[in-house]
Structure formats: C-alpha cells, structure tokens
Image (cartoon, rainbow, N blue to C red; front, top):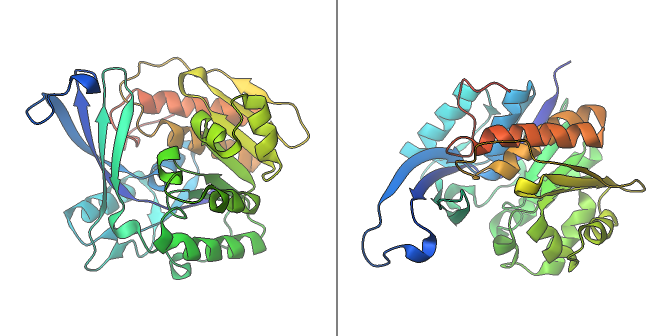
Length: 301
C-alpha cells in the first residue's frame, strides 16, 4: 500500500544568489558579481517534493498567486508528481525568498510570504487515508494563518494521524512570543528542528538536555545538525546519532527539508528511529549537492 503524506505550509519561489566572496566583502551600494537562478521553494513544498523521490505519495496544502511565479510553481509540482488542490489564489502574488549563498554553502534568506498568508480550514482536503501530516512552522508563525492551522491540527489529531512539525527558524520565531510557540508543541507527535532552534526553545546548549526538555511536549524529537549529522530520541528511550552522508556541498538550501522528507518516509511506516535518521541523511546529501532546495524531475534516490 502506498504511503500518503500531507504537507501543509509555505510554497515559495526561491531566487538563489550565489556569491564568490564572503558576505562581509559584498560591495554594498555597488555591484558584486554573482550567479543567480530561480527554483521552487518553501519548507512544506520542499518536503513534499523530496517525498516524491522516496516512493511516497505527497500532497501539498498552500497558496500561490495567479502570476508567472505561481504558474511555474504549479507546473513543477505537476512534473514532480506532487498532488495539490486549489493552490492558486486570484489576485494574489506568490511568495518569494531571496537566498544568498556564500562560498561555504551557507545560506541567508529574505522571505516574503505573499499568498502563503491566510491559510484556513477550508484549504484542508479530505484527510482520509493519509498516514502522516507535515506542518511547516512558517505557517503558524504567520498571524494570518495561525487560527486556520490550529483548526487543521485539531481535525488531523481527531483522525489519529501523526503530525510532524518543523518550527521554521529562530529568526522567524523571534517575531512571536516564545510561549506561544511552545504552546504548539504538545499538539505535535514528532518535532524536527535544527540545533539553533532546539537551544532557542529550551535554553539548553547541551543537546541531550535539550532533547529531554522537548520530549516533555513531543513523543519524538529529532535535531538536525548539518554537516555533523542528526540526533534523535523517543520518549523513554536512549538517543541515537547518525553522521551526515559524504557529499560535495554546493548549496545547503533545503537540506533540512530534504532530511525531513527522508525521515518521515521511513518513520511513518516503520517507527525505526535509527533507520529513519539514516534515510534523512541520505536524501540531505543529494540536496546539498545541487543548487536549489528541491530535486530535479529526474532525480532518483
């Protein structure tokens, strides 16, 4: 039986600007040579896209505008096999992220939510038959989507479908009361976040202590550590660490999203933490080896 995952959240156009100098050496107020390319982006959209490379049937819930960017994003979903309904919002502009990538592969993002603001319960499709739901933190962090996302979660939990949650970024979380963000965590089954986010939410710089603190709210917690791999822990069990797979790093944009896709593809079927962490690391290695946050149409894992 095919595994089905519903991804809720942001659908963006990424404008990737790759520079050959460190950000401190940018000729501010003048010209700095760069390589610029456009790609589909948005955390939820990226997770859905990478899930299609794992033999999982992925469906996206989000919004794009009725503009050229929106048409391109929908076309890419169709080519990758991501399912969707009613993505396009008449009269709206699509969300865009300008991604600055330095010579080390580190990325800095400048997001504009655009049509992604205002997700509501009416956007949720029939959830019968879904094995898991992934929610990007960028959606509840948007005040215009918070009520709708909470209503979706209530309906999803009533259907006993596990919820995987990535709280987005520390930069985005700092725009919201931290206690509001923490209040969402008990609604989630699995928390996927990076090291900086784990420290921010718990105040613990020791990862084992951070994991234990987060496990009070969520049954399973995974901390993504970039080139150092990942560590995960289930409530009542020992933590498990995996190393990052070897890769030629060109662009880290979407690395965490691709990891989440690999992890979810295994964990929602087998519940095996070690196996799921390794699957996440494998897909993340494919992601960082290409420019952009999503797989190519012909990408095979």
